[in-house]
Every structure is written in C-alpha cells, then in structure tokens.
Image 1 (tube, rainbow, N blue to C red):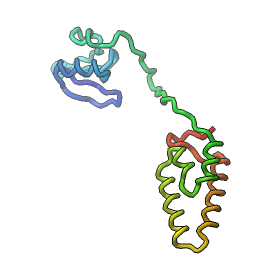
Image 2 (tube, rainbow, N blue to C red; image 1 turned 90 degrees about the horizontal axis):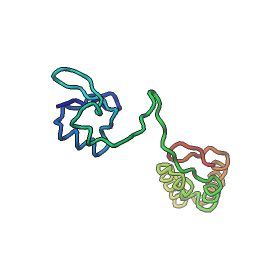
Image 3 (cartoon, rainbow, N blue to C red; image 1 turned 135 degrees about the vertical axis):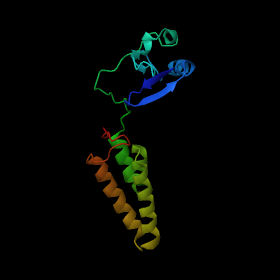
Image 4 (cartoon, rainbow, N blue to C red; image 1 turned 180 degrees about the vertical axis):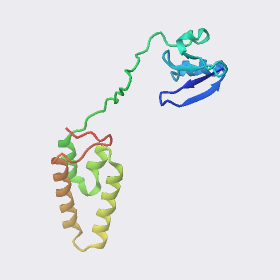
Length: 150
C-alpha cells in the first residue's frame, strides 16, 4: 500500500498496489509521481517501485518545477465576430461564436425585452447591433478562454 502525492500537493490514499497499477495505465500516476509508504513514511518515485515499473509508460515529459503550460487554444477571428455582430448582434451571435455564452443569453433576453416592451423595437435592435460591432472591433471581446480575438 502507498499514498500518492498528487500534482495539487494533496495526499491520496493509502491505496492497494492493484489500484496504483490501474492509475498507471490511466496516466494518473507517472514515473515522477511521489509515493509514500504509510508504514515507514519513506518517499519513493513511482518508477522506483518494482511492481509498478512494468505499468508505467516508457517515457514521459516531466514539467518544469513551478511552470504550468496553458493548453493551446484555437484563436477566433475578430472580423467574423464583427460580421456576426452587425448581422445578428441582437441575438448574441458574436458572443456565441466567441464562447461567451452567458453574455449571449443576456443579449437575447435584452433584445426580446426591447422588441416586445418598447415601441421602437426595430430601432433598438439596430442600435444593439451597431454597439456590438463596435465592441468587437475595439478588441474588447475575448473568447471563452479570455484570449483576445485576432
């Protein structure tokens, strides 16, 4: 039995060796994972435990200490978002495209309220489209991962 020191610094376990073998196959335990023997309190790397060696992947990149690499994200087009804002800004289409779903829902609700409760619904919807397009073109709109549109 071993306890596992997670990448978050928390201690998990103790767990049976069969569970650790399964975690190795799932990629949850890698060669550099720190294991603690709960009886002797000895710290070992996972690749130092003979029973786990055959279950660990052959090679794995180890992240640098104190460094977290943000997963790459797909960039969104500012011009496409602006076009969507001009044509369908009142429906929040530009925000849907950018991955800003709560903002899109707010835009839909505001547009519906303007259309049904205000006599100048069409004019208000056109103004909303213009402001949405200016908002996008100014570079203020970011995608759902808080990355600027390009």
